[in-house]
Image 1 (cartoon, rainbow, N blue to C red):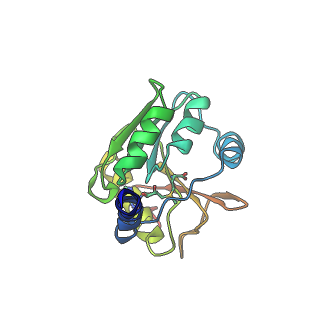
Image 2 (tube, helix red, strand yellow):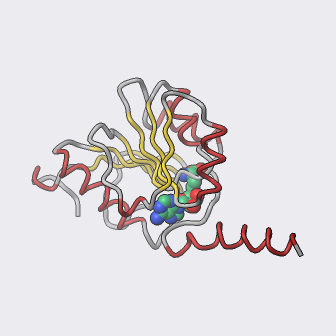
Length: 173
Ligand SMILES: C[S@@+](CC[C@H](N)C(=O)[O-])C[C@H]1O[C@@H](n2cnc3c(N)ncnc32)[C@H](O)[C@@H]1O
């Protein structure tokens, strides 16, 4: 009987997020290491935000490049796993629905492994961040292109966008 309740708990924890975004599937570490050295070379000057940070694999890849990273994750079990696996002063993991979060002003790049339903809305969220803080913010999407927006670079399944503030007059909407 206990196994029934444990299994049900896991299904609920991992299943309920699909209402708010993509389900948990991690990006492969090797792919991240390549993307963060060639597509967008991350460095000490960067603050990467992962919207839907899962087990924190992206945050750890960013920290290996010397960047600070912040992850927002809805599933409390994954927040605990990410905190255990990501013990670095460069990394912070927060239990939050990223749709309701104002991304920090230090953000230089936002990463997502999202889904086709939400990718445009995620781009708009990054654009709001760029507009609020009046600076360009990069957006890296794994697996999904943003419809009708020209990417700056791409490599296999990674797409990189330079998102301009709306008030710059150069924003793609
Ligand atoms: C496809 S996984 C990607 C995980 C990680 N970014 C990676 O690339 O390995 C998407 C993650 O987003 C989380 N998620 C979905 N909707 C969310 C929301 N609205 N707020 C915070 N996290 C969310 C899921 O729980 C899941 O862990």
